[in-house]
Length: 160
Image 1 (cartoon, helix red, strand yellow):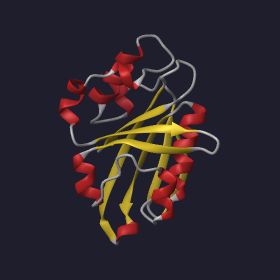
Image 2 (cartoon, rainbow, N blue to C red):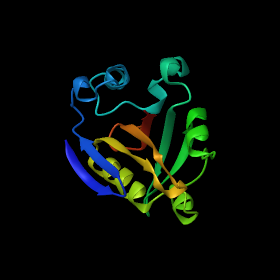
Image 3 (cartoon, rainbow, N blue to C red):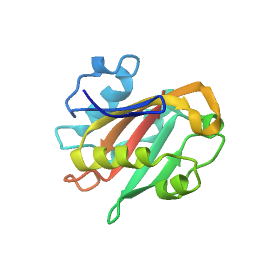
Image 4 (spheres, rainbow, N blue to C red):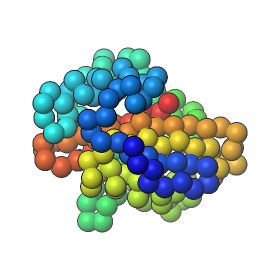
């Protein structure tokens, strides 16, 4: 485990791709599903999953599609429970747009860029300081995906 950044109560950490499920206490089933879909490959692809795979986590799933030159990402999926917690819908929004609107920190983009460029599992946690709701804390388990079998092209995230 490596801590990338810490700021405003948020901590951004990364793990190696072969980190064991026990390192993610309470989320072993989610990481085990992701590992099973790797099936001996570099990473699983988003297409390797079925909607039914996420029954236990419906509403808490986020999927990012990474864009390059310059790095950015588009929220392919933003779960309903995330809409409620964040008080906004983000599906189809760009990360850079969210930063420009003050709805997300640049540090989030830097974090996801690191995960994409270094093929790491990510974990972030912290309070909602930008909404004046510091009493609410959330966490994300971020799992890289690859549609081409060579590079990280997407991220499957679970809001905890």
